[in-house]
Image (cartoon, rainbow, N blue to C red):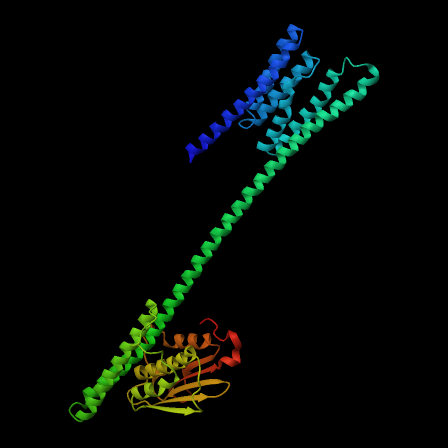
Length: 401
């Protein structure tokens, strides 16, 4: 970057030097028509100094202005005629405005006023008195106008370039902010997807393992007394394990983005709750009030997971003799799920790492429903969830899903 910067600066410097040389050649040649040899010497010297300002117009604009002012003052003192080198004055005025900030404006204004007055006054010294004042005034106004227009043109170009740079910086900042926001949104989406997958796996594995543990303990107790009952328990364990494997495979397929997974089956729905309750054992009873409605897959999955997680907690914490009732109420307004037991779940020890109840609450609330869970009056534990039908929430019923 430094080499490119210096290379560009060098090119600009040599361009200005070439421009100054062109001004010198154009300003010196007409001077030799002057008959006064002393005047020729002064004219060449002041013209060279004034043209040198062109070479410094970008590298040192204020130095160029100073050189031009000194040369102009020298011309006023030693000469009585305008020289071609004066054409460099508007160029220097433009350059000061283009490459310096507003702090240089007073110097340009003072130089323009003094030069516009002193120069024309000197040049019109030999004009007849009746025309001298008018001619000097016209030339003064013309000189000042040329310098002023050149300076204002430089300021206009400078402000335009500054505005372009600001707009470019703003566009760059906006683009950077948009990229940052996009990355944040992607990270949030990835985190949410991971949390949903973790919750799904928790619901599947926790319930299945709870059933397997309960059935395995029962089979061990019945092995010697009732071998046929022990065989049934082992069958339940095998079926539960196979269903769990299928559920895990389905979730993994969704994570991988597999569109075709014929062996994995659809997500659990309302019609699968009966089999879920039956697999949980004889201590769980199911009551259904109303006809099973046709609902979106996501809503049916939430109801299924609430029942599944509630039964998981019942099997883990309620105790071996507790009974559980699962009540499903279907109506046009919504679906109500009540899972209550008479066990000791409210007083059982917890390791503090469970996410079952928070997961159920998050699922229900994301569908616009209501959720409560806690000890029952008189003993036991109860989970209650109310989920509205999609037509009760309109198009926004999938909030946060």
